[in-house]
Length: 103
Length: 156
Image 1: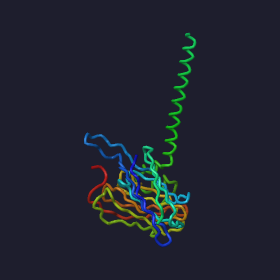
Image 2: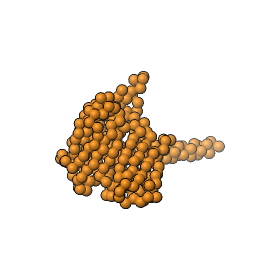
Image 3: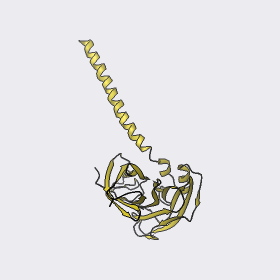
Image 4: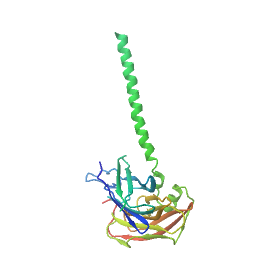
């Protein structure tokens, strides 16, 4: 099971700024280990963020996103105390969902 | 006696088939999820091919797209890239690195209500042009910026 995400959702002006830090290896499938064997690709493929049941961002990622991925986006219509829920799925089918309260 | 043994064998044989079918079903649902991931687009090597994999015709350069990143990245494994678009009806933003093994790094869908802006970090194998591909009102636009890399982020 993967480590939890760090999510911060804060109101700046009339927008909610969401910053997410995920814990994931993001192995490209290009690297080789010390024995010369290719390390299989292992990376987050889908990321979805929802607020009040509405998707506010969805993403598809390739292995070229950095290890322990960082993501920032902004949406309008959020109020303090409401929740932002973020889910990712990797190419091995592993899944992680975390939420943050808008401040 | 023999007869009942035969029946038992048949029954257990059937159960095995059922179990196989069930596990195959699980496997299929796993594949179903993977279909949400546009493999064709992530296998492309160039901007034009990526646009085609997304179902577009061609992308035009636009000054309304801004790429914010360092001009020189010391560590190619972690290159911060932000993209914002002033194009009306921006629906999607993608980040591509021209000289990576596969160009497309990340693709974002921007629903209405979400600002046409994303910020993330990507890996770069070497100094390369970085493209921001934006889908706005059904058409594709791009902006480009060269980022110099002093230490590669792929391989090694």
